[in-house]
Image (cartoon, one colour):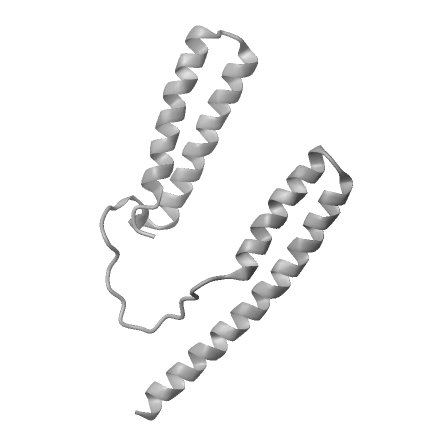
Length: 134
């Protein structure tokens, strides 16, 4: 993604300002250390995104591609996996049954993701086969 590291690094800068303010006004090592750790984690993640793909720091639209690419309109699997993460985290805090329900939803979401990926590949093969016949 072009420009994907910019918001992450901006968020890290905002956290850095807040961490400095926390060090100045609070002065307690625990809170200030946690704020500093958050800054370090966000900057590390932003740098990793930047180093993984150099376009992540450039603004503007990406370069045009000539090859066909299968892009799904919506993904039920992504939604189920996201809900399962939230359900499992609530389960850690409140009730075990939510944790187990979240794990079950995660397994079903991954299964659905596999089905979606297989359908995407089949569609791509079909489209490429039609183009070769022309």
